[in-house]
Length: 231
Image (cartoon, rainbow, N blue to C red; front, side):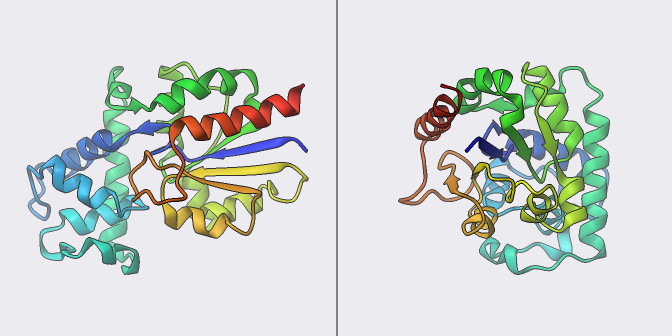
């Protein structure tokens, strides 16, 4: 069987939290509905629970701040949340015009380890992320790792979830050995009975547990599969 490696982006390939923080701060500036000058430490405490950009609204909108961030997954988005999400991606689209924008992104060592394999076997990898596609493409080009198929926030909204995208693309039924890597446990759980191997990236934003993998372990597994497939 050929390996097929599905990769999350934020928290797996790149530590992009500071970029998202800067986007939120840019959006909030000059709008009295939102908090200004939020500390990065508070932002990061919230980021560990977040799975979609609309949820930042519950950190920034003054009259709807979610004090118990562990309840974030129970919140259903409303019109204000979607408005914030639209503003978030509009702010990013404005910021991305800066040629140096990608310097806000911090590659993990895992990315640098994996990059030669991404370039040698691009057909083996797919990126599946809640981040918008344009910013992923721009980042990969800047860090000289483009050429990988990207499925971003737009496709996830269209098909309902990351798993929905995978099923729509029929990645799970073509006989490949499918590995899915994500740092968010809530994104991994739906895949556990659908793919051959789930890898929880213990170096990302969510809480690591006893079954989480280190960057070195994850790379050794992927490298091993590719070596066996191409010997």
